[in-house]
Amino acid sequence: MGRGAQCCSYSGCGGKSLALVGSIGMREDLIEERRKKLARLKEAGIDPYPARVRGRIEAIGIILRGFDVLSRRKKEVVVAGRVMGVRDQGGVLFLDVRDESGSIQAVLKKDSLADFNFLKSVLDRGDFVATSGPLFKTKKGERSVEVKEFRILAKSLRPLPDTWYGLEETETRLRQRYLDLLINQDVAGVFRKKAIFWQGFRDRLRQEGFLEVETPVLEPIPGGAEAEPFKTHHNALDMDLYLRISLELSLKKLLIGGFEKVFEIGRIFRNEGIDREHLQDYTQLEFYWAYRDYRDLMAFVEKMYKSVIKKVAGGFTTKHGGKSINWGKKWALVDYVAEFKKASGLDPLTASPDALERAASALDIEIEPHFGKGRLIDLIFKKAVRPRLIQPCFLIDPPVEVEPLAKRLAADPRRVERVQVMACGTELGKGFSELNDEYGMPPAAGFGVSERLFSVLMDKPIRETVVFPLVKPKRD
Image 1 (tube, rainbow, N blue to C red):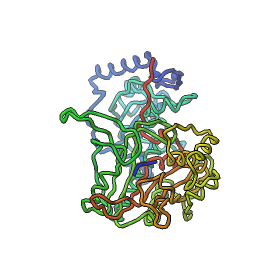
Image 2 (image 1 turned 135 degrees about the vertical axis):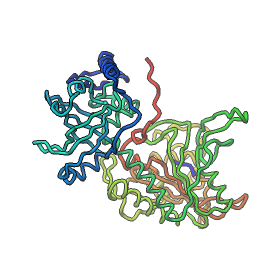
Image 3 (image 1 turned 180 degrees about the horizontal axis):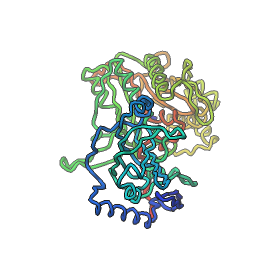
Image 4 (image 1 turned 180 degrees about the vertical axis):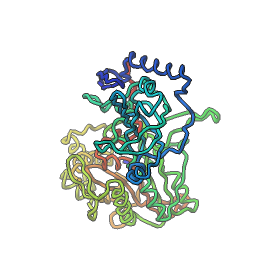
């Protein structure tokens, strides 16, 4: 079942702010200044990169939720995190300390810390620190830790960016995603949602009795989809292998072997182009269900998608391209052939290749001599039909030329039992009643959905919903 010149602003601790150009974007003088601070720490006998953190560290988010109770009890807490802000008020130093769960203010006072002046001289935004002390609120109501003990856990030598900006900021953010995650909390939130997304599918399938499996990434013969594979060589066996382009074949072998409900969430590799919807390596879910057909798939998939979307989006309505998408309504059944006729004026079941070529040319579709009828139908569909399907629906029963490996409709053998989940003008999942001859695989339905669905839910290009997407190296 296959799937369908930067500028950054950097700051030092002492109020310095510079616009720096380039992917590294670091001023050597600022780095050198921090190296001198590192040397001073070592000269003072302080390990700037200790292996252990003493005391029981509390997550900042938990502290903030129980702040009022903890502060009344005068309970001392140990907080560890990265310094994201430094404000020097002479005899008082205010730090914004952030961990994965939240941010809290740490207040260092000259009359409470014997080494206050030294700490102030070596501390920078970006350093990892541990603080301990009681909780209190400032006059402005800021929830804070009154620092009684302080320790540097990791001295940062490179200044952190304040913000990302510029015409090409997306490319910079993708190249330096670790900084993007650090500075832009909304970006970090996307990947927390992505974990919920895949876990939602996994939980729903397990509840239905599916077995999760792992199948080989390296294959002697690529199969299961029409795509260009990546090729590699196995030195020990002295043989060429391919990175899989689909999860299909191995999962079907498990059905032959006696398993009836199997699924895998795994990486797929296709040596093809990059655009808003496609990557060369991506995550895909495929499941196979014995003794079911594509009609059974539709009922199950609609419930599963709605369950996952509610967990990710907090409801059944999302935005995409400025449009409101309602996933909560009953999904319509849309006939592929009827929709094709409506958009192109041609019946894909009876149209000749010449007629399809003329229709494709009229839509400014580039055609090559080797394109067969199925390819022409698919290209016209993608250009003329797919963009019209905005609200979630099931597109069913295309011509056999489009999906030759699906079972044919008993009522019309020119068509096949295939279903596509369509929304936002694109395909967001595909399944069909599987062919099952040769060794005698049981009657079965199979379905696949990739992380394109998640990118649509986030209303972002797919590269922006991947933690570390592959980008072309910059050349000087």
